[in-house]
Each structure stands twice: as C-alpha cells, then as structure tokens.
Image 1 (cartoon, rainbow, N blue to C red):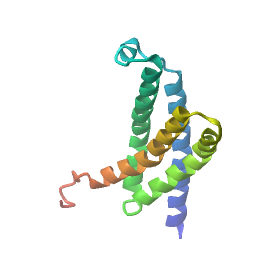
Image 2 (spheres, rainbow, N blue to C red):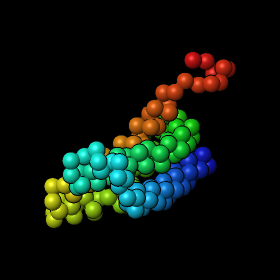
Image 3 (tube, rainbow, N blue to C red):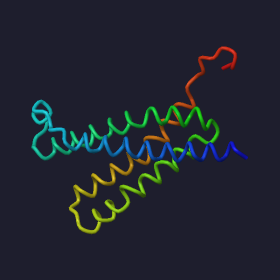
Length: 145
C-alpha cells in the first residue's frame, strides 16, 4: 500500500522540479544574445535570431531533461515512458497550452511555428530520453545482457 503512494509522491516531486528547471532554462535562453559569428552565417538578422533561439532552446531542453530521464528510467523501470509522458503533459498544460492557443489566435506565422516547435521539444524530449535510458546496456555484470 505504501509503495504506490511513495511512487506517486516521487512523480509529483519530479513534476515540480522539472517545471522549475524548465522555467529557469527558458528564462536563461531568452536573455542570451545571438552571437555575432552566428549572425554572419545567416542571410538576415531575423533568421539568425530565430535559428539561434530554436537550437539553443532545444539544447537546453535536452540538458534539463537528462537528469530527470535518468531518475525516471531508474525509479519506474516498466512505466518510465508513461510517467515521462504524464510529466511533460502536465507541464505543457501548465505553461504552454495557453500560450499556444494565444499564438494561434493572434500571432503571425513565425510565432505559431515557434510555439509548435517549443511544444514538440517539450513533449518529446523527456519521453525520448527515458526510452534511450531504458535501452542502455547495464554495467552490472550480475544482471546479464
């Protein structure tokens, strides 16, 4: 009886910690200027900024998700991908759902594309990393292949 309660509490704690880490990562990415060497690689200033923001944000999402994917894969060996999907769905519903709706009702095509890419990164990174963590071979020689 205690084990499901403990696992649920761990999942709720992971949701909270992942939410805080994700918000700080997004804020950090948002305040970073586009480097001059990056701007020289693109034809326009706007395309350089958008490409920098999307790639830097994707790298940030992966880096923030790695420790959480490791914990989820180890604590929930059979339900890891489902737990990761629930964690990301809760965070997406908390943060991005209203922003995506606003972007589709009032924003230009570029903003819509950015919010779609942001949602895909958020919803896909953690479950994909948990799946990869579960597929890694074990170093424990007693466990077998």
